[in-house]
Image 1: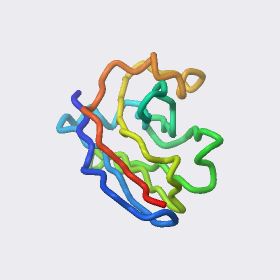
Image 2: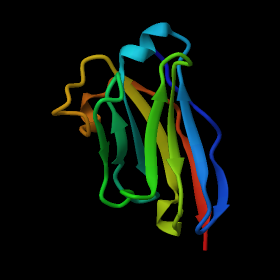
Image 3: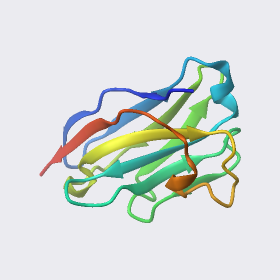
Length: 125
């Protein structure tokens, strides 16, 4: 499974942006998927994650109430809806997937084996 992120973009603070993560293989619907981000000079951090059936989700405290992760398994796609964006949300956003991530490890980026190339999101003040 090779996840592919949609294009990010430049948005003003307070604006919204939706990222998508898609894979061509039907098996993607069986994978846990996470969104992670890395700003310049910082370590990559977990943003939001979702189990294969959407039954469990995880959000970092920094994005709770602003970001929503969801999935459409019929389309082999996971979405990250980002609202009320802040300049500190500026980062390269990565989608990652794995078949074997447990609910317990959902937020652990080291448990994800399949990574997209990343997409730049820039929020201007």
